[in-house]
Length: 368
Image 1 (cartoon, rainbow, N blue to C red):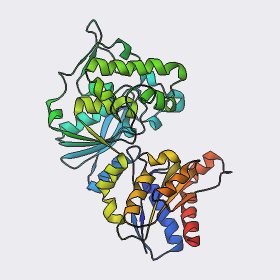
Image 2 (cartoon, helix red, strand yellow; image 1 turned 90 degrees about the vertical axis):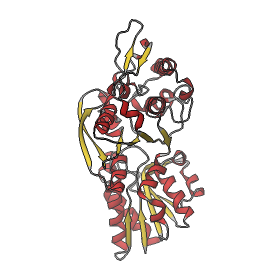
Image 3 (cartoon, one colour; image 1 turned 180 degrees about the horizontal axis):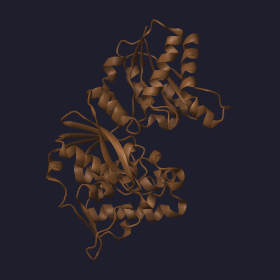
Image 4 (cartoon, rainbow, N blue to C red; image 1 turned 135 degrees about the horizontal axis):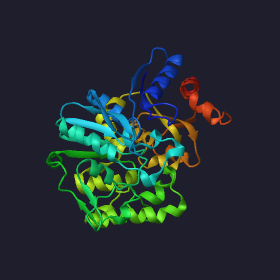
């Protein structure tokens, strides 16, 4: 029996490779002679760099950079001599900031710009970015400043690339951006389709999970709108995905000429998932929680779609199977399996994630 194991991370519990290893152990508890193919996945957030770099066979580079609050941080990206792969989660990610310290008004994407600059210095011709899991809402201005752009007020004074200063923005000077950017192809893994501003924009939809209160939404949204207007790229702001990562999707499109596509599709192509699923007897995938929104570009839905196309049953494991998740059964998923017990305290469930996942896989195979 050949089983493909292709999970995403289980947030705050397991990385994708750890989840894949736990699933593999569960398979071997029941089917010791099974042939397993472990394919850790990502849709653009945590684990994206590792998944793509491993698929390329690319070594990793450790680079000094900054977190979203501007504090010194060391991040890792993959580089094979011509191609670089990196993610926002590893430098300006929400999980890098303790809940008590999170402050969107003071946060920026400068750390990502420093990683891009390092890759350019090393001769990268292609940059692949995962932009899920950010702590920022700066329309990518931090990234631009780190690459050499300047944000200016009406008197020509430089502004900080943080939302607190953006209401004073009058001009974006891009003359300092490196010429090497014009020769680089930028591909972005993006799992959302939101525009930059408005009721479905970056601030209104994703701000609350970054600590934005209802009283701040309008002001922060107006700051993003000002960036778009001053930049002269107002139409780009309305495109699907421009609201990703607090508007980083907008800046990547407008200033770096990036192309955006669903992250799970980009990763699946990089790791050759369709070819690896073909001819398998079973596919196992999963992530921390699944619901109706999982269909909107999340890893389990993407893996299930490829499995369905290959005629292979696909089972999704999740820490929580939430209301509406049953819609996945109409889109290539054979069964939804919740790991652990709902009575188990959350902290304990997160800590016991690998054990619970291993047990859930073994139990499924015993009754399948």
